[in-house]
Image (tube, rainbow, N blue to C red):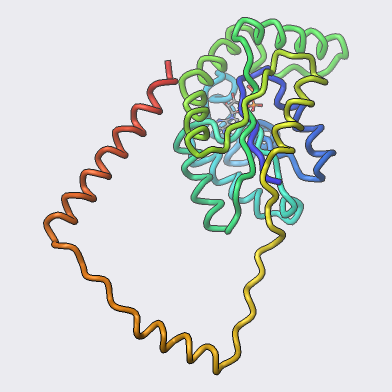
Length: 257
Ligand code: ADP
């Protein structure tokens, strides 16, 4: 099972990811956690990301794409994974599509946790208060003014992914404001409706040599397709590309604001 959890800070991605990890025996790949580990380790990536994260802004796409590409290759991710906090921009989503298809992998679903913006501030304030009461360390980006930047970054840069994945037919939207058990039920329901993925692709056994020769002959006899006239073909495909470009732009922009 390969999933993406999409939703603003405080939407409950972490809670749901942990449960899905147990249920499906897959790993949670949180770019936030990976980056925080890099910061703590003082690695070159950590040094690059530290201040950006503290301001609540997004770390450059190339940095996160590289860490995810490396992480999905690890043996524990073979059974599947939940991406939490990635992709966060359209270029990251495009890079992920490329990365997965190069590995011969496919996403099963993108789960969007829909939440009201006003509730997010309250939720995170509670999270912060609880962490403080436990004496736990606070995240430097959980301060109210930084949180505003993080929610804004989501609205502007990540929300367009809802349309991106809806167009791919992968989106499953769930009400993230419902009680946790209901959110879990809704996610389970959405995943239960997924078409069963065939077990690992097996290469079809080669037919015996005699049959192969016979089918090669048939193939030889097939009439070759006539190429359409040059001018009209070029014009046709040009038009298609142009309109495709326009519609992508429209989609990306429509949700941005
Ligand atoms: P949140 O709790 O806000 O969802 P995360 O723990 O996922 O946040 O991420 C914390 C910070 O790490 C983000 O505000 C951002 O600076 C950085 N970050 C995490 N994932 C990404 C990503 N995919 N692209 C860019 N920056 C990221």
